[in-house]
Image (cartoon, rainbow over all chains, first blue to last red; front, side, top):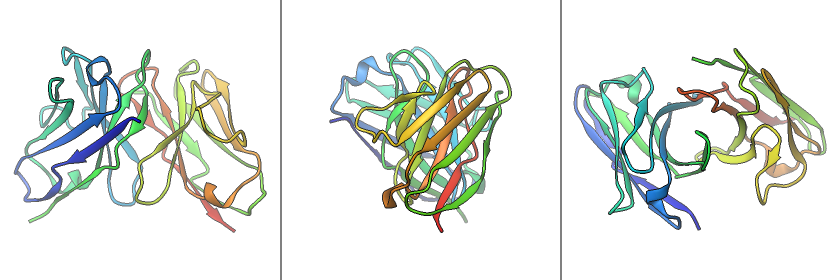
Length: 119
Length: 107
């Protein structure tokens, strides 16, 4: 079955960088777009970024544009989120999700990885 | 950006009750709306896609209706496992936007 496993979270100081990974299995990764979504403690879901199946197109939310970059390596069935200039308000659980075929929604989600930005 | 106004933000109900959650979009999104369920510490789970289509394997007590700007999600008879937080998501336009969530609690 479809499985998405995030990794790379941890505690990081403000201003530092972190790269999250999302390992995909159970489907043909290279034919599906992918998303990143985050959830701050006790808060709702916030969509962050989407990348096309081949990595040729990407779109980021204004809240992270210029600091976060979504990318993928289809040879490794892995999605990435490079996070730079981290701020305390970036503290959240970060989820990757598979884009639904034919539209921009997401259908299957990973379990998430926790990022804490604190000095 | 399209704003999604979801209500109520919380709801107390009993097993067997019928509950309804609404989402209103700030502009016409056709039927480009999904409903997700999230339990504490878990990933969201897709329940309803394209406003009214039940995802495979999801119990039929869950349903959704609506088109344009107004959408409704209903659980016809609450079961103990349904106590969770529910979110709507519009995917008509980027950036994707979620409703604020509805926390469904046991009365």
